[in-house]
Each structure stands twice: as C-alpha cells, then as structure tokens.
Image (cartoon, rainbow, N blue to C red; front, side, top):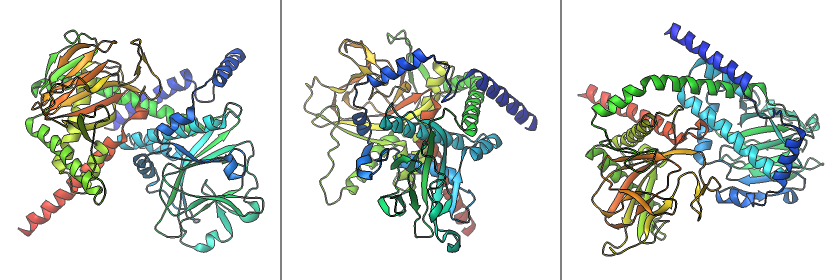
Length: 557
C-alpha cells in the first residue's frame, strides 16, 4: 500500500508539472493587442439581454447602485441553490475557531487535505467551490461591464458566530475576511481599486451592512443562501454576527483586483484536481473490460447498436433492472405525489400537468429529493439504494460502451412518470415530449445551436425504462426535420444510451402511465451532480443506524 501510494504521488506530481508547463491559467494571456481589441469590440457588440437570461435561472437583482448610495454596489438573490450551499458548508467542518468567533476555509487548507487523501466526496465539493466561484465571478463581471475588467485574486469561505469571550470583540467590527477591526481603522488600508463579493451560504440571523461616511448604517441585508453582495473593497462595511451562540453566518468571499494575478493556491489546487481526475480515470480504464464482462454475466445484453438505430453514438441494452427494482422506483414516484399533495394541505391541489402537453400529467423526483424523503422515513432504504445503484449502472454502461477517453459524470438525474389525463382519447397527434437535443437548441433549418437555455455542458444521455403496461409513449430518434428515424418500445430494464446532441422525442402516452429514469451526463467534472454524493452519504447513515438498531434488538433477544 505504501509503495502504491508513493507511485501515485509521483504520477500526480508529474501530471501537475505537465499542466503547469502546458496550460495557461485565468489572467494569463499571450494575445496580441489586435486580438484584445477585437475581443473588446465583440463584447461591446453583444445585444442579448444577459440580465433576462440570469432571471430565467432564478437570479434576481434586489438592489442596485442607485439604491445603495454608492457606485459599484449590488445585491442579487439566487446565485446558488440550497443543496449547493449545504454542500459548500461541509468544507468548514472541523475548522479551528478564532478568538473573535470566525472560521476560515481557504485553498491552502484544501490543497493540503486533497494531497493527504483522495476522497471523492471532498474532491466533488471542492470542484463545486471552484464552480461557485466561477458563477459569481462571471455574473459580477457582467454586472460591472467591460469598462471595469476584474481579475480573480482569491476566494475563501468565512463563518462567523458569537465568541466564547465577548471581550474579544468589544469595540471592533466583523469583516467578511474573518478579522475584527477597531472602529477608527475599519476602512483604513482597504484598496479602492479592488472589488469584493460576499455570497451567503447559510440562512442565519446575521446581516451584511454598508456604512456611510459617519459610520452609520446605510443599508442592511440579511445573509441567506445564494444572496450575493458586491462592492468596491474600499467601501465601509461590516458583518453583523448572529446573536444566538449556536448560529453561524457563513459566506463565500471572492476578492477581485485590476491586476492579472491569480492566487498561487488557487492555481495549484486546480492543477491538483486535474491530476486527481486523470489518475482516477486511468484506474477506471484498467477496469473497463471487466465492467462490461460483469454486465454480460449479470444478463445485460446490447440488443441494438448505432448502425441498427441509424446513428453513430446510440445503443439499446436490456436486462439492466429487475421487476422488483422497476416497481420500487415506480412506487417512489407515487410517494412523491402523495407528499406533494400533503404539502399543499388547505390550498389548491397540484395538477402536475406536463409542461409539454396538456393531455398528460407529469410527476417526477430527483435523487436529491429522494434522499431527503428517505431521511424523513417516507422512502425506504432499499428504495434509495435502488435509485443510486440503477443510476450508477446506467452511467457505467454508457461510459464503457462508448469507450470514452475521459470519465463520465452525472449532471442531472430525474425519475419521472407520464400519465394520460383521458385514457379514452386515443387519437392524439401531439407528442409527450417534442423532438429536441439535450445540449443545444433545435432551429427551424435543422441545425442545433449551443445557446442559452441549452445545457451545453451535457455530453451523453440515457433513459432506463421501468414498465411497458401503457399505450403509446414510444421513444424515437429523429431527423433534423423532426421526422421519425426509428422508434423503441419501453419495458422494464431497457436502457437507451446516446450522445446528448442526438435528436429524439417521445410519442403521446395514450393510456396508462409510463415511467422512466432519465439521466444526463457530462465530461466536465465541474458540473458533477452533488446530489449523488449527498444521497450516498445519507444512505450510509441510514444503513449504519439500521445496523445499530438490529444489533440492539439482537442483544435484547
């Protein structure tokens, strides 16, 4: 084991040396002045309403500079989702608490921990940290405009809580970087040419406050998950710490500068993540043939290839799920429907009408939601385990069948049932899901453009079917003019795998309900679905609790 670890460390260092030598990092460029001017002109010529695009994703500006009495300030909600905040907070676990009551996670800590242990869960959370940093940075640059170029300097997470000894913070003001400064020096030393964003990760009772020249509160905003406050670093401001001792106020802090200089730890940690990714895939490649052989031994058969399906990157496999597994997932969707109705008690019942056709109901559950319901005892441990196992087997089969040269990651996983509203209406000509591709927007001329709101980071897709006792609902591949190429009849355990750019659709479900596990994959580890890591952790916790209870019962007997 020691020898293997030493070899892995050497391989990682070699890969990091290669990356450092051959890759340019944010802020580094060898572009000519002409290239730079051309890029600036293209930026200025953009006519798309970028703010509207962000609003469609749930990002809304709640206060602008004019509302906040100072140029360059903004407050925006919705930058991060609850599950993303929840996961990022795990990076602050077990951190030392300073005397003033602050904790700080930075990339020096991350780099050290990643070198000590190649823990997949920690690695994925760290990738989320970089992704969140990138999301906030891109939005901030958009908001500020091309006339105010910003370059990322560093990023970190800071949590504030009440200190053990109140005398430690007497007369000083908390700042977003984890320090506490005296009143007369609160704005001293702050760089006027720098810019800072503070994005909330917790829903605490603390506040972010802007101060005026008389050190009075100009504006105050509660800290909440996804709320981002942007300001010139030289602006007077403070953090109002939660009053309750058991409450923590945590934020992702990003510092920008006008200089093209990226923090050393930032680039080193990115390089290490690239090296870890390469090593993990090298291991997976060695196991590739064994995995396909294992599927075959378990009764999984490739029944149609790309040639038979009139396309290159397409296949159909049967036998990936048993009848019990299929019925378990179908029951899970029905439980979700009951829970949804219970949550609307006293108000109008949800209709669950499909977003694609008024003739069908559409009810689904994500892996994230399933894990939460399992934790509440609404979904069985076996159900959650089945959801995870079938998802992972589908991912593995797609990755190994297409013999990909990079690892394939979950991007989004959705268990969904489509049900005919009126079983007697069998003459329908509409589609349950219109012809589309999963990573681009199908145009009238048959082309497909990788534009918003397409999920352009998606590379492969798969659908695992759970039943066949319904009429209609055939999956079909399509030509660019939306006409059918070849259709496939769903049944329990049948998996259809294909490149995300392939045109496909679903015919009308005329009677009964059609259930399937839809999976979208990406080759970009930055988009890896966190919910799978969280669900596996919850499953392990539930299994450990179950074993502990069984042990107690056995001892009592």
